[in-house]
Image (cartoon, rainbow over the protein chains, first blue to last red):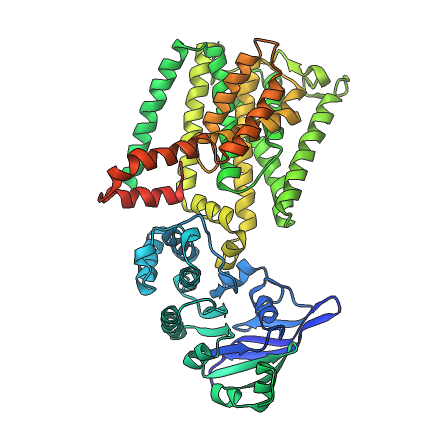
Length: 238
Length: 346
């Protein structure tokens, strides 16, 4: 069994009296691709933010490649080699696609290599047509793809994606799946997602969140056919 | 990229040489000197606000610190070289400490504005209250409301008998402005500058990419303060006196108005806004019918309402729409230009 690259131990996040993440112990191993699913308010995105450093957990630990990263600022987490894509496209609107991706590549590479990496990522994501267009003028799906470009440009060993397929067309989702699989060749991947079709197309293992805790963790078909999951996820009896 | 940068340098040098030669034929060098100093001060805020996204309400504090540092050091050393260096360093270090406190403290933009404003007010009040003989640094008395007069002005390094004054000071200030302009251009084209623009656009995303936003903002803030300090030292030389008015709120507000009118996110805009409005202020100072402050306020309101992006960006848009676009079509150079524009607009 491959070694763990991401672990949480008894992770808890409280907002006043509300427990958004409740004592979650989670392990992701090298080369794994894991989807986190659950209904709205299940705690997935809060859990995600605790991993990325956007939130500091109330209790518990986050470990990346065995190193304690609990409470680290996002830039320190990212600097470890962790590629992060947030729920809402989070890009530099006034800059071109090319400049956006260059900024991600430059964080880990000297300028000339960053130029080459930028060209490679633009080609890989088929963004050549819009490479010189400002992000603010692009459609939602294109902005999502550029954000995935940030992740690809940094050659990460761990990728954290929050709803990467949200608001995308079928073609864009298919392209996104391909890119995620490519990333998964060299990196472990965690995806927070709602789109069940997309999850089926990319994931082998799924973790279901419910009321801030892990309800079940298994392969995708087993989870999808679980009556309890169908009940809480679809809001009706299986 | 290197070719286009070289072309830009040559174009800028030619335009600057023509202006430095031609302007004294229309306006006195005494006035032009202070306009060049204002332009430098405008550029200092244009850098940190327009490219770094840091709205500082206290740029006058660094301007005043530079001026006072120069005056105090010049009285104590009897020459101008070391005081000029100190006038750049003291505001730079002061801003680095203040910036570190604000950026590492994760203060929002509003609080940052309030703090820089309050620091300016504190310095203004403090300097105003230093009239007594106990407020002395070395041989220099701070002088309170009356300020510090009679300090040694610029001289050729190592030759205290050779003063740089009158036309000489004008050429010196013009050369200093040009150097600062090239320095700002170089900074913005460097990876640091490109990252700073990224931070202006989206701080959270740059953090999630792995950049430590706090240190970069602190360095940017200190750089702007150092340039303002240099402008302050030159202003002290131009006026041959420094007074607490340098730290005043009206001075801070004027710098912000220069940037808005000239155009943020460009290098030339704040420069043009500062020199243009500075000259207007000079002309208005010669009459008493129109209140200067009221007119500046009116200009700001009109620009915010009708030309919110400022003169230079608006002029660039008109140029692109009318002349620039047809010429660019089908030209390979357009790719290079667009790329450059993404990095340094203006």
